[in-house]
Amino acid sequence: MPDYREEPFDTRAAYQTAVDLVLSRASKEICIFDPDLKALELDSRSRADAIGAFLAAGRDRNLRIVLHDPDYLTRYSARLSALRKRYSHCFQFRQTPEPLRGIADCFVLADGASGAIRFHADHFRGKLLLDRPLVIHDWQQRFEELWIESTPCTSATQLGL
Image (cartoon, rainbow, N blue to C red; front, side, top):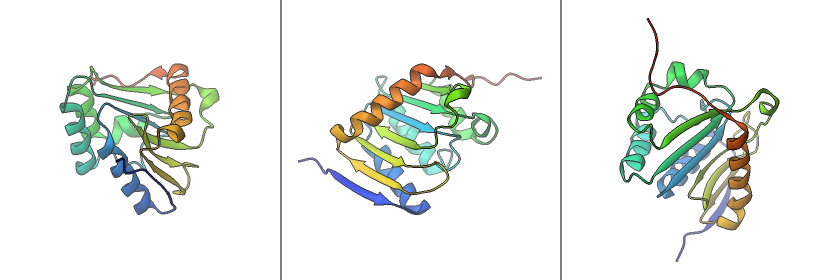
């Protein structure tokens, strides 16, 4: 029987717990929409290890991220960048076009069934949804629309002199 839940959160710690729960539910795909990835702490050792384990578990795994600004990713996310290099066949980033950069909510979705949703990127108020595919459906559709409108960013290899 599925462990379906819907719980509000309003602190950084509760948000981080919600993200960990959602990531642990992923078996095929993780979709993330976030302004810059700072609050997600994807580059922490534990999160990078969890993402690495997810991607290593099968060639059919997929991680897609849409963000407004890739600067934090390219400057401060060495672990995530290393994972992107290693799993470039299933790990993609896209950047929203300028007209969409005012969108302020953010979310992490797993397999179109679970999600951690923040209503505004400046606050940690949101909700955790586990095994709620009907509720997640609209968020997944929103992600797909953002994905189509966005353009690829951040190369898997660093260029420089």
